[in-house]
Amino acid sequence: MAKALQVLEEDPDVFARAERFIEAADWIVWQLTGVETRNACTAGYKGAYQDGGYPSREFFEALHPGFGTFVDKVDGPLSPLGGLAGRLTAEAAAWTGLPEGIAVAVGNVDAHVTAPAAQAVEAGQLVAIMGTSTCHVMSGATLADVPGMCGVVADGIIPGLYGYEAGQSGVGDIFGWFVDSLESSLTHDELTARAAAQRPGQHGLVALDWHNGNRSVLVDHHLSGVIVGQTLATKPEDQYRALIEATAYGTRTIVETLETAGVPVTEFIAAGGLLKNTFLMQLYSDVLRRPISVIDSEQGPALGSAIHAAVAAGEYPDVRAAAAAMGKVKRAVYTPDEAAADVYDRLYAEYQQLHEYFGKGGNDVLHRLRDLREEVAQ
Image (cartoon, rainbow, N blue to C red; front, top):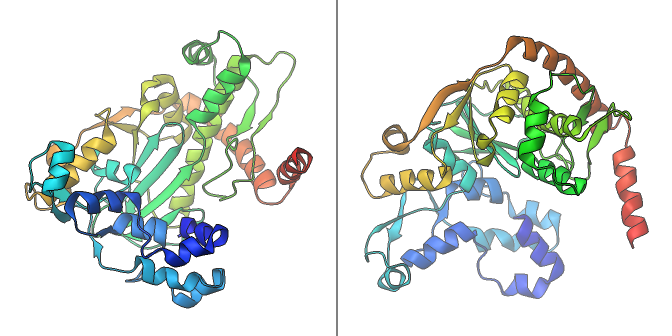
C-alpha cells in the first residue's frame, strides 16, 4: 500500500496506467504457475487486508486524491498459507529445471514462514529472527490492540490464529556500524570476548538501540541512538557490550508490551544469524529473564518454505502437521543467570526511563538534531 501511494505521488501517470499492484512473492508464483494469487500474509501486513477486505475506497481517497482506485488494482480472492497456488508450467519448468506440473505453494514472508520451521505453531510462541535487524513474529489466540505492532493479521502466520509482528530496525547492523567506525583491527570476535569477560553493569553504560530508528514500539524512524555514562576510561568493549544490551532491552520492551496488552508470550524462540554469538544469546536470556529456545536449522526461511510446500503438495494435511514432522527446534538452550538478571533489571529500569524521555516527547532533542542535520546538508 505504501509503495503504491509513493508511485501515485511521484508519477501519477504510471499509477493510472497500472492495471495491478502485486507483491513480488505473489508475482513470482504467478510467473511459475500462470495463476494470479495473493497470499493472506502479505495482503494483511503490506496491504492492510482485514475483516474480509481492504480499507474502503473513501479511506484511500482521503490519503491522496485518486488513490481510491487502488482497491480495484489489488482486489481478488486470497489464498491461505500452505495453499496450492497452481502447478509449474512447461515454460517455468524450462527456466528452473524442475518437473512440469509439480505443486507450487502460495507466497509468504521470510520472517513469518520461519515460525513453523521452529515448530512455533501455537499461540504464545514468539520467534525472533535475529540478524542485521530483528523481526518478532508470534501467533495469538485473540485479537488485541498492542501498541507499536507492525501488523496484526488473522491467519497471517498460522491459519486459525492472529499473527502479531513487531521488530527492531537495527540490531546486527548496529554492531557492524560500531566495529566499522573504530577503524581498527578489532573484530566482532575480539570485542565479544572482551565484553564477555565483564560483569553486568561493570561498564557503567546504558544505550538506546535507535541507530536506525525505532520500529516497535514507538514506530518512529526519526529517532537516533543514545549512549549514557561514558567517561575517559570507557573502552570499545564497554560500548560494544552496552549496544548488545540495548538491543536486548528493546526486545524485552516488545515482549512486555505484548503481555501488558493481554497477549501472553509462552516461549521465546530465536532464529537467524546472531545465533552464532552464544554470548549475545545468553545475555538476551538474562535480560529477558526467560529461557530461549533456538531453531535447529541454519536456513529457517527455506525450511519454512519447504514445510508450506509440503502442505500444498498434499504430503501433510496442514501446516501444524508438517511443522511437527519437518520443523527443528532445541528447547531452552539458554536459561537466565539469576544474579545477572538482577543487575539487568536495574539497568532495564534505566533504559525504560530513557526510552520514555527521548522517545515519547519528554525531550525532542533527537528530532531537533535530525532536522538540523538535514537543514545543514541541503
